[in-house]
Length: 310
Image (tube, rainbow, N blue to C red; front, side, top):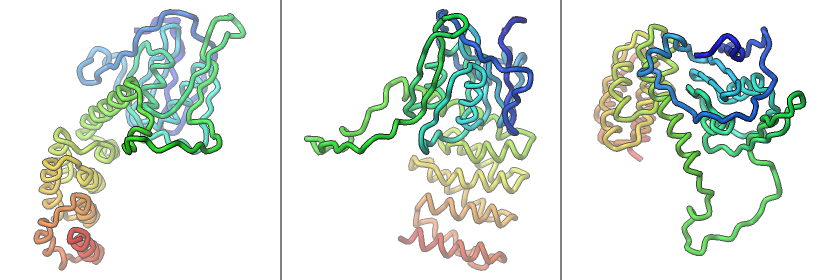
């Protein structure tokens, strides 16, 4: 729990960054850093009592001698980086057109700059530069650079073994671990947000979840029973992204039921998702839609049947 002389908390809402009240532009002294702690938003009820759950697009950032304390809910990585820059006072360079990925959900406490950037960026190349603080002379983070520095192309010889994978850079275990942590946090946050009373929150959760054995039943409840047509359509689109064979069968069963939705937008989303499933045995279940009252549905069902026949 932060004391009365803790660093200023920066709350970033979906509208942008509020810089009123002053952002910390100083430095953190050379003190031992605690390892990053992932706070389970479901299990840690005591922490939630002190820090109420954030709405999508919101975050808080604190930087002090113990490191970064960061809470973000479905925030684009670029905005998270900008918030860290404003709070810790370092230079930020994002090179070229490097993609930073979809919005992220994070909860870190006592994390060093290296740990924090690894959690945000995963396997995206980045570097951190440290130097003396002009005021105190202590070592601090002065610059973060994201993305590879452009340079002339260099031809690489083909692997002697013929295995192209041998020529690819191997991500570090830390990068793989950071990606797994980010994925798990996003999944947990999305599962919780599917039951939100705010339709906008449910729509975003249905769109960003990964369709697997844990989430498919919940996405099925959304696509078949949510009061918001947009949330039902988003859930249908996500169900079409199932990868595992058993998951695809479960998703296809739910999508076939969604074809009878009263809103044609949901029916269209379900038809397009069935194309991703790619199972030609589903074609007999689609024929009834050739007489659908909405011309867009009639056109889409013909396209879906042709796609599944190929």
